[in-house]
Image (tube, rainbow, N blue to C red; front, side):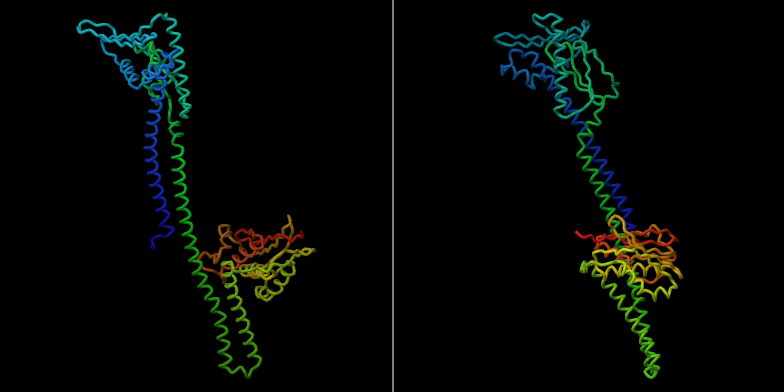
Length: 484
């Protein structure tokens, strides 16, 4: 699967996310339409149930305990019959409703009449007989029932957690004319219910109207929307992590190949030098020339020590990465260790015609740490400064204390490190290339990674301040030792 690289995975991830987004949008749209219809059905049910309840209350005053009375007026059959009677509006049709209640029985009469002769006609009319009630009393009762109906609709909306801006229209029962319009244009209404009577006086019909139910539907869909959004976010995050992991693995593989190639050359140099020295001793019989023999032997010893140092460096880093390194913590003074490292590196400093300035403090600087690993950290940082700085390099090492922390600064006048590489230089095997993708300075790419790991094990951290072309400043920050 050579084609499966970070470069190819990125467009594949984008296409997959777009397809997922489209599918999610299609699914959400279908869900929205279904939820919208469900809200409309629920609103219609709320109004019809409220109408049924108010009609029952209007005729059941004083007879609430009658089970048959309740069974009849709250039955779906009676409700359907009443709606059919209310909705039957034909030419030349006259309808009349009457109900009477006495101690013995309840009488409900529905009467409809129409003319057989098509030449004769009368206006459509509907009316209800009200026994022993004045028109004023009928109108007053009708207003009370209307308020009760609207209040019951509002309570049921709250019960179902439907929060909407609603209104109602009122129609004349007999003529069907609108007598209470709503302050919203008809084409902007999201929901309009059927017309319902709310008592048996048949003066008016009630209609619930809602301007906008979009946010109600969205609220009902909130969990679906959140889960859909989270799924897209998690999918995008998974692709992002996958691409980043693949990219890091490719960079790591390339760095490892470069490390192997570089270390092969690094190891080959001392081996070749020793081989040439031994061949010269044998070929020219230098055993008879003690001075030359000693010179060649010293060269061989030096190269063997350098070879051993490189091998130990790799082994220590491997142990560090595997977590097998056990530090030997003790109370140490940092400044004498710095002076020892600087003194031990005099040969390298002279070869580069460099100059190291050490600015110690008057008082000792104690930390709890491993002296060997701390000295290796100092060696790596000074060695890096020497490697990457030009001839006649100037390196300044200083110590300072602030907020119970010790800061050891290593400043050089080298070429500096571009900002885009300042985090990567601490990664294993990473080395900065020049414009021709070539390493100008020999090295393993392990030094700064080792420095960061060791300092982290001492509860400290390393900071880098640099500008391209203006040198580097590495700052090792460690906690000072404090007696409890």
